[in-house]
Length: 161
Length: 139
Image (spheres, rainbow over the protein chains, first blue to last red):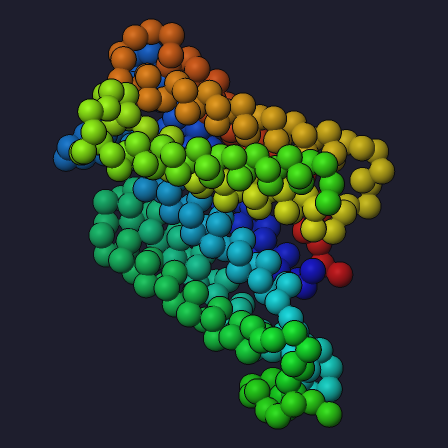
């Protein structure tokens, strides 16, 4: 597994741990006698204050990020400069940074009731996925169609010799 | 494909079918006379899809496809994998039954089942993280 996938998948696992912890707190609070609260109409009482963070961390921090990490590892490599390589690695690394800053911003903005931070976080998450798409696009191709790209890995040049 | 993976994937498929049936019930509330407890099934439906289906499918495929840790000969990771499977699904079963009734009937007793479900799912999540972490290595 490439080092960048290790970082992405382990970070996704950390999000899973945080996500299930938040979810368990919410579920347990629903059931604890005398502590059961319904979602309020106008505000966020315990434990519903954590609900947005739980959803964001599980869906984006865990599921989306895990998929990106495994895709970076397992999608077919291209032939770049005569050797198999993933290519455009900086875009994938950027996606890793952007998605985590984005999730943090959405979570912090949600907990602090700051809609600007939530919006900024969502923009960063979208940019992260777009950056990953730039990385992965040339790797999604029919089996056996090794493409060659110049050393440096920016293009999708003619078929390899 | 290892036995644990087969159990994970088949159970995930079963949860998906159940989730879709619950989805039908939720969608039919406006056109059919259904008991009030159906109104309280939305959180269970969501978690059946995300944890019963998607996460469980991932757990099974990770157990199968990720590189094995060097110390795997002890059999401990396999036992922890089965424990993860059991806790995840026991937690989901209890949740699906107890959550709508806890919300619909404010009666003592059901709430503690939700606490048990939360603890089981919490343990399953962290067990998966702990057992998978060592298998995510650079080479």
